Length: 233
Image (cartoon, rainbow, N blue to C red; front, side, top):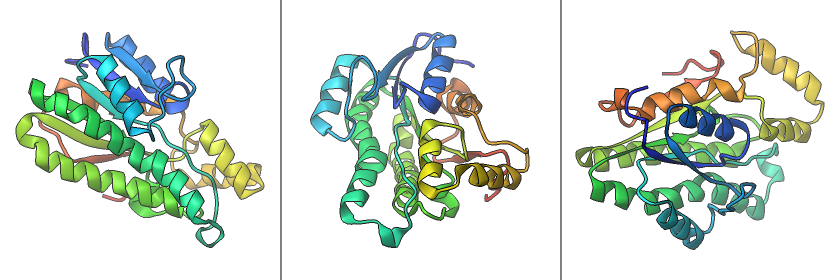
């Protein structure tokens, strides 16, 4: 895709799953990738603003930010508690806000940049057993649209990719928490029109498109990569 070679991209949660697939695709396009992840060689806790600021400063000029890091566990809302809410919010919403607050000033100063945040269809249409997570992902969508408006005149484009059900460790943990994962997996498969769950490799194409020069006139948009599970406009 145009305009990715030689750029620098931060990918949060880039050590495994969807994040690792995104980081690999960027590398294939000649993009320098900096991974922020608790499981990476250079650990970065995205919930710690000071740690994020230090890591962003060390990364040098950043052209592309991918807010991918996330965490969830299946729990009906009335069986959750404030400590659980805080963990979900800290990772899925405040972590992305920390990155945005630390990265965007440099993009403004340099006259442009691209941000792609990984939300979820849970944030667009809701998902049983994921109330706090859905709230955070809906927040990511609203935050992105607001910043896209605020920063459009600064040549900064912000968009959202919403994966559907994707085979990752997080999904496996989620299904284990729900009980009877084999039955749940088959129910999910039947619900998806293309007939299978997503794979991490299904997601990077949309992310790299938004990060490329081909998307210079696109901002504040949300695209679902779900195999047709949700077709909400």
